[in-house]
Amino acid sequence: MALLDGIADRRGEFLLFALTPPRATSAGPRAQEVADVTLARLQPLGLDGLILYDIADEADRNPDERPFPFLPTLDPAAFLAEYLAAWNAPAIVYRAVGKYGPDELRRWFGEQDPARVLTVLVGAASRDSPARTSLRDAQALRQEANPALLAGGVAIPERHGMRGDEHQRLLAKQDAGSRFFVTQVVYDVNAAKNLVSDYHYACAERGVPAVPIVFTFSVCGSMRTLELLRWLGVDVPRWIENDLRHATDTLEASCRLSLAAATDLIAFCRGLGVPFGINVESVSIRRVEIEMAVRLAEQVGAQLRR
Amino acid sequence: MALLDGIADRRGEFLLFALTPPRATSAGPRAQEVADVTLARLQPLGLDGLILYDIADEADRNPDERPFPFLPTLDPAAFLAEYLAAWNAPAIVYRAVGKYGPDELRRWFGEQDPARVLTVLVGAASRDSPARTSLRDAQALRQEANPALLAGGVAIPERHGMRGDEHQRLLAKQDAGSRFFVTQVVYDVNAAKNLVSDYHYACAERGVPAVPIVFTFSVCGSMRTLELLRWLGVDVPRWIENDLRHATDTLEASCRLSLAAATDLIAFCRGLGVPFGINVESVSIRRVEIEMAVRLAEQVGAQLRR
Image 1 (cartoon, chains in turn purple, blue):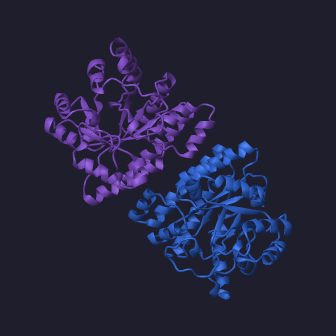
Image 2: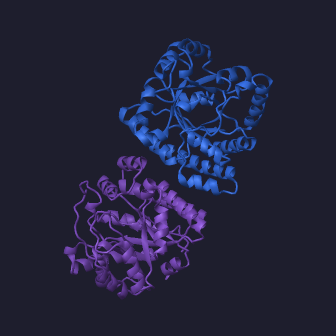
Image 3: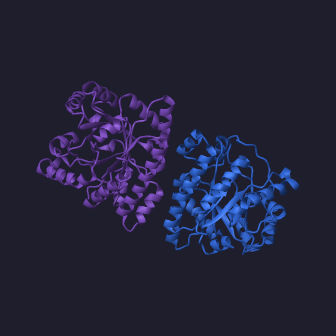
């Protein structure tokens, strides 16, 4: 169980792949088909774990029109339980905690096998979102219902660029039980380095060990996917946007750029001694984009000491 | 004359070193000694050119207290003419044009040998600075008095980050006769890439060839030097500041970081096909910092196709 050990020993160097569950309307044979095709595609990667996102309509976070329509997806916990029985490594199930009542969350935490399931608890997208359970309450419920269940939190380098205190938020989440962090998609390596660096020195100052930070990378096959990333709050530097816009093959160019960014961050984290993992997310559901994301995971994975 | 050819052919790949002339109070034998020691130190580098800064008291640009006192320096043109007779490659003499009257500038332009001297024309530090000659007028005077005298302009990636139009300024300066650009000290590679990228695509769109952009790098031996760089408007990313603050050898760490930044930018410019040069500036007058700057120039120079 490389992932569980890598988190417990704060060693990192693990490879994950993130999926958004299929649309709620495809429950049944169609969802099973998607699950089977996906597992077959990921099998050669020898992943240390799978991430399953819990999609919330983030319209309350961003008043701009969403570049793609929001379509409700299957619950990631249900998708795992009902369709991914063949998956034989751990899965990290996201919980957008504001969507669930405390009893529902407590029950779910209690039912999970900590050897097979981990979770990432995500707070409300904005302060104005109505939240059925707060992040703080969810952290306490997890601790109470299933203390062995490993929980992580999200890390947002872009927020660090704006407010400069994201490393303090990570430390607070760590105090509340987070054993690892997962970033949103990274295109701005500089922002990611700033966060890791501040986090590292703040940990050293407090005498607290740094826990693994999982950096998420993606490919981007079109300017529409780029728009979606931006809408979701991902900072894409001008030069990367320009490179993608003018590339003869946008998808291929984005894979090359993300690989270079990952390589840079890997060297940086190793230099500081901050444990890290790599997550590759397939943002689009186009087959060519998914295949390129798998290629990216393969190439980044080859650099990890697993 | 690699520098003159590299600019004329827009080939770039040249190596420069930048000096601030000695203090005005050391005119005479002391200034000659500084000049001789400096040339001896630089000789092994096989530089393509020397940059001589024209220091203006930039207090009008920045209301914060200057971390080092402002001390008037020798005029760079006078320093070159009177003390650097032994220098046998071209020199790029900065002219902070607001300091000079039009007649004075016209005379100086007219007296220069374009095979030995180039200039960089720098406008006022802020709009509120009283300027005896505007940048636009200085550009016209140079064209009129000595059209063969190669003139460049300054490029400020940090300004691009704030306003997003620095590439348009470069194109306007190019229209007014600029044949190359020199940046201030680069610590934020991302900002430099954003500017180069936007400049490249704007040139392509207008069908105008890109002229060489000279990137300036420096070493930094102490947090005080870092403060001075910041005061001068240089963006130093958090992670670099942290690395320097916690390094056992700040100077050595800064050399390594600047080398990595230069290597990254060189590959980026070559990939885009934008001609570039490298300039190493010694910001401090401490001997160890000067020697480390020479080492940086040697290491970056080894990567250039000269």
